[in-house]
Amino acid sequence: MNTLARAILLLLPFAAPSMWAQSTTPAKAEADPSISEIAANFTNYTRITKDPVYVNMELAILCRGASKEEVEAARTKFGPHANAAILIYMNQSAASAFGTNATPYPVGSVIVKQKKVLGYRENGKWVNEVNNGVGGMVKRPSGYDPEHGDWEYFYFEDPKKIQSGRIASCVQCHAAAKEKDHVFGTWRETKN
Ligand code: HEC
Image (cartoon, rainbow, N blue to C red):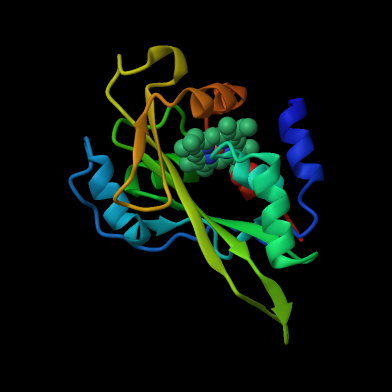
């Protein structure tokens, strides 16, 4: 396990069960989905994480390159119990490959990570929960970015303002998961 992955596992103090929960999602023509289609429909994909997986806030927001000030601001806003969680969705091509550990993922595979900031706990429940950005990766036909697994990345908080492409920060960090076709999947390994 590389240093990054180890650091992440150590920083998962509120790890929740993240069983691979297969549900049935109708197959769609998914050979070359557009980013805007994905942004509009990803919540209909198979949700791979049964429950939100709690991740260290600082790491969770690294996915959009947040500044330290933003982290501090979030902590000030949400208090000492501030925490962040992710939900992972996959379209059918990605879910089948993930379920059988078949890499590389087939062209047209889509993996989406929805981030939430969980406010605080009251009567055993998180309240003040807000969605806090959606990051995704789409397997494009061979030649799109061969050095980096031909994944196109996208990120948005507002679906009308989506960044997408070979986004350098995403590409570089995900290179640490190269042996798993750039998919970390660390949320799968977390246990109570
Ligand atoms: C500093 C490293 C880093 C950067 C930068 C980064 N990621 Fe990630 N990403 C991770 C880690 C680590 C995970 C594993 C889950 C977690 O801890 O959130 C992950 C998980 C994901 C996943 C779920 C699939 C998987 O690999 O487990 C998607 C989708 C994703 N990131 C998209 C993006 C996008 C889009 C960007 C750029 C806007 C980005 N990431 C930038 C480290 C990074």
